[in-house]
Image (cartoon, rainbow, N blue to C red; front, side, top):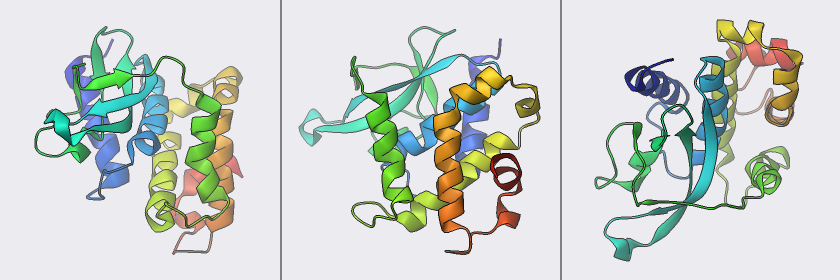
Length: 194
């Protein structure tokens, strides 16, 4: 079983590869969804969680947020975008869950997935910076699909991640040739999805 330090390094590498210096604000689902898949192929059991994050000081309010819970390390979370909450946020990506995390118990995941991909697939410019989100989503998919462990996954695994892969395929097909996006930038997305 990978150590917490290993998980921290994997998460940091993943996040830097797909976000670079991009603003982490409102990228939590976009990063956590493929990060969960990546950690899974690295034999790290985790679950995608959603809820709210209590800003500090509390007068700053609550923000909708997503993170991962580590199933082999009860009480530990992976939050690759926690730095979006400013200088008072926790440091690192892997740490014990705190009272700042307020998980929702009954999340309608199909609605969340639709809210994530619909603006990109429908080319909506309302509230979504397509020039930011499209490349980040394609970089994340390329990162996951280019891992050597992907070749060992079963058909059941591929079917279980069909919603994500289908959305990435649609995003790729829609934006290919736009915003400087071409097959050469995302060879594994192109090869495995098309």
